[in-house]
Length: 175
Picture (tube, rainbow, N blue to C red):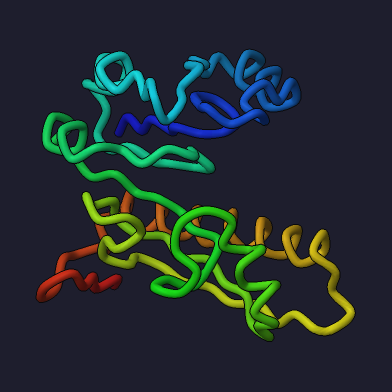
């Protein structure tokens, strides 16, 4: 099974795309990576499609762009995204800051399939963790990012083990 990750660490528009620790890990393990300088004005979706055409599915990990409907229709395979928040709450950009500002007591991560509607695809996995008044924005985000990694890993594992099945409209069953 060939997976491609569009990420802040490998293929990304995000400033952490040049993370040297991750790049050294990828190079040391012979894992190919590509950095594409994308933006809202130039998503470079045709170039991305060429890179991912022979993959079995695509994972978005801190990829800070919305893939177009044209891209999703052209790719024709599953795309999994991670959202550091409990969808449908705190959609879009800066969900951890939105949740922190709202004073939530439970933070979460949601892994879901990508659809044309932002952060609205069928949910594969969700995880939660308690936060308190002692958390500042930095510790809040750190807890959120750790939860995000765990949730995405669990969702990908379930997907690769063929334990993720569509159920009714916009719902998923994970066995």
